[in-house]
Length: 227
Image (tube, rainbow, N blue to C red):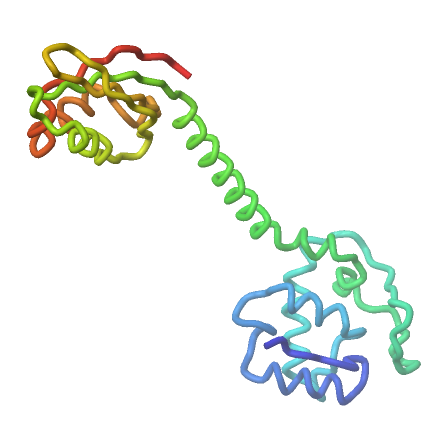
C-alpha cells in the first residue's frame, strides 16, 4: 500500500516524515528509489537537524546521491500552486536543484531499470525471430503406406498412421488406392516443418516398428515438395 505524505512544507508534515524515517535510510528500503525523489521534490528546504533529525539526515543523503547527476549551479525555484509559509520562499540549496526538474529527469536517474527492460524486450524479439526461422521451412509430402496382404484391416492401418503425433507434423487427406489381387494401399498427405520432422525418421522409427508394423509393411515417398 502506498505511503502518503502531505503538507511537507509545514511543521506537521515534516514531523510525520521524520517519524516515518525513524530507523530507515530511505523511503522504500535501503537504497534510493523514485519514492525518495518524489518526496524530496515536495520538501522545499532542508529540514532542521534539531527539530527533524531523521528527515534532515535523509535529505542530506538524497542530496548527496543526486548532486553528481546535476553538476550545474542551481539558482533556486519554486513550483506554483503549492501553499507554503512566507519563509519557505527562500531559494533552495544547490543540491536541491533536481527537485525542480520534470519527470524525464527522474527517469534518467534510474537508467539501469530502463536498460534492463530494453534488454528483456530485445531478448523477446530475438526469441520470436528464432521461432519464426525454425518454422519457416515447410514441406508437403505424399506417402504410400502398404499393408501386408488383402486381409489387413485398412481402417486400423490408417488409425495406426494417424496415431503418430509430434511437433511439426500435420496429417492431411487420404484415400485407398487399389494395387492388385484385392490389395489396396493407403495414400496420405502430410505437412512437416523441415527443422522438426525427418520423413526417414518418421518411417523407420515410428511407422514400420511395433506396434504399427502389425498393419504396415512398408512406406514410400511418392512426392516431396517445399512449401
